[in-house]
Image (cartoon, rainbow, N blue to C red; front, side):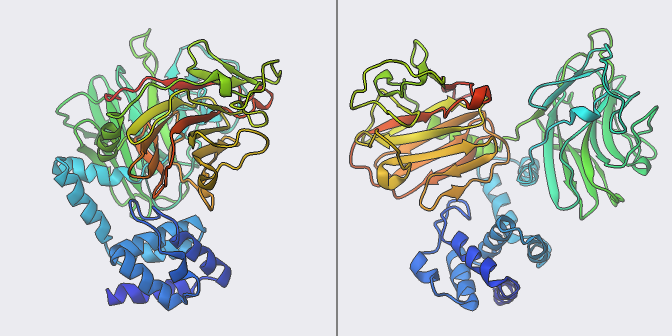
Length: 496
C-alpha cells in the first residue's frame, strides 16, 4: 500500500496544475470506479496532491485507487502516465478480484478468463475504401459478404484487387484490444489483424512475416496461418471468433466465443506498424458461402445477467400526443416519434411543449420500479429519460435533475452525455441502437443501458422523487433529414 501511495503521489506531481484540478474534478464524479460514489467536493476543494492521494487510497482501497487514477488520466489525455501506472505491478490486483467475481457468478475458469479479455472490447468498423470490388459492406460498416459481381470502383493503393479482403477503419499501435466476428453459415473465411503497411495487390501470402496474424477455415479445416501452418483441433464448429491483441506484449490470441476455448496464440509478434482488423470472406461459391461476416457487439455475461434482472420490471409505455411539440409526428399506436419542419395547427394546451421538440409518456409511475426500451438506430441526435409531471413545458427548458429531468443524450452522432450537474461525458465503447431506462422510484435511482451490449451507460443516484414520473423523449430536430429516423418504443425481451 505504501509503494502504491508513493507511485500515485509521483504521478500527481507529474501533472500540470490545470491537469491536477481537472483530475480532482473527475474524482468528484460517481462511477469513475463502477458502482462507487465520488469523493465529496468539500474534501477535495483545497486538497494538495499528497492529501488527494490519501483520499483516493482511503476511498478506493489500494488497487481501486490505481484503477481510478488510470481511468481519469485516460480521460484527460495523459497516456504516458497511464502506461507508467499500468507497469507499476505485473498484474493489477483488481483484475484478479474481478476474476473471482466472474467465478462466483457461476462462470467456469475458461469463461472467467475470456470475460477479463472482453473488458478490452473496442468498437470496430470496416473501411469501404479497402474492400475488394466484389465485396458488399453494410451501411454501418459491421457486415461484409461476397457477391462474385465486380463493382466499378476506383483503383487505389488502399484497395485489395485480387483477394476478397477488407480492413478495419480503426488503427492501433499500443495497449490491448478485443473484438468478435460472427462466421455462422460460412464455409470459408479468414479473420485476424494485419499491419497497416501490408501488400494489397495481387496474390497475398497470409503469414506473420508479411504482416498478417490470422486463422482461417478452408475445406472444413481450421488453421492458424503461422510458419508452418497449425491445424486447430476444434470440439465444435465455430460460430463466433474472438480476437485479443496485446500490442505491447506482442500477442495475438483467437477464441471460440461460445465455448471460451483458446484456439491459438501468436507470441513474440513483431509489430512495426499500426494494426488493423483483417477479414477475408472468400468467394461466395455459387451461394454456398454467401453468409456475411459480422462484427458483433461484445456482451459481457455478468452485464447481461444484471440487465436481465432489471428487465423484469418492464412496463407498457406510449407517448402522449397532448404533450407533443407541434412539429413532432407520432405514429398511430403512439410508439414512434420523429420531427418534421412543418408546424401543425394544434391547440397550445398547458401540457404541450411549445419551444423544445419533446414529448412525454402517457403513463406515470410512482413508488415502484419500472423499465422500458427505446430504439435510437439511425439517429445523430436524441434525448431520453424521465421527468416529473410538474415540469415546465414552455419556452427554453434546462434538462437537469433540479428542474425535474433525469436524461442522457446524443449530439452530432458521437457526443454522449448525461444531463447531470455538472454534465458528464459518457465513455461509449459501442454506439447504442437501443437504450434501456430503469427507475427505482423509492431507491432514488435512474439508470440507462445499452441494450445490445448490456453496458450500463450512466446512473443518477440519490434522486429525490416527490411526484409521479413520466417517460421523456426528444427525437431532436431532423437536421435537414440527417436525423429524421424515429425514436421507437420497442417491446422488451428478457432473452435478448
